[in-house]
Image (cartoon, rainbow, N blue to C red; front, top):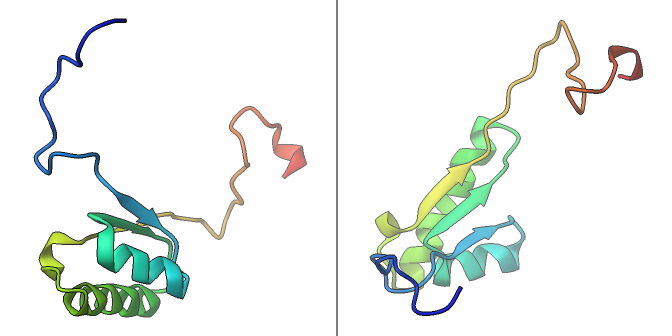
Amino acid sequence: MRGPLNVPSSPQGRPLLVQAGSSPDGREFAARYAEAIFTAQQTLADGQEFYADMKRRARLAGRDPELVKIMPESSRSSARRRPRPWPWMPSWTS
């Protein structure tokens, strides 16, 4: 395909920057630059701590914490049945 892209620019004028990772370096990078942060915390308390820490870090980096969006992973499991890794995999393998 040739020619200019025929879609409007994003509101921020550049691609959206999403950070995934919870290491200290990853958190610092996200607080300074990311519009959204993907995280996978194991407990509600860990998630709340992560959220508060990222908002605090964004504020310290001179950013409006409300503009930094946190995107938590969501997963469910059942004690009755262990899910198979792939839908096509026979149940006897899990």
